[in-house]
Amino acid sequence: MEHKAPIGEMIAWPTPFQNQVTVAFESTSDGEAEILVTDLYGHTITHEVILIHEGRNTRQFQGLDRLSAGITSCRCKMPISNAMYLKSRKQIS
Image 1: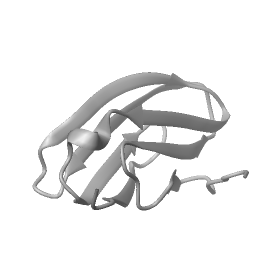
Image 2 (image 1 turned 45 degrees about the vertical axis):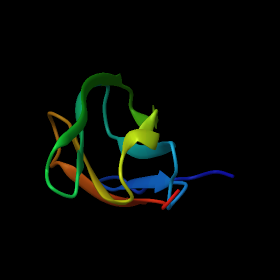
Image 3 (image 1 turned 30 degrees about the vertical axis):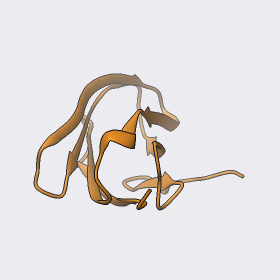
């Protein structure tokens, strides 16, 4: 299944997720992006700076089974655009 995000937006699948989630976003240029994933209380789950390219980019986060069920937030900040935000849910195991 093809998951496409419009420029300036992020999508995630599957939702809800169990131990892994994939986020996708479109970029208008090559460069670096800062990705911050937090739990409902704002605690950092992961913080990464990744290389991205013009067009569709995806990043998979694994090992999330240690998280409690609930809402997670993902922020992606690229130098030439506004930050993108996404909320996703972790499924009750």
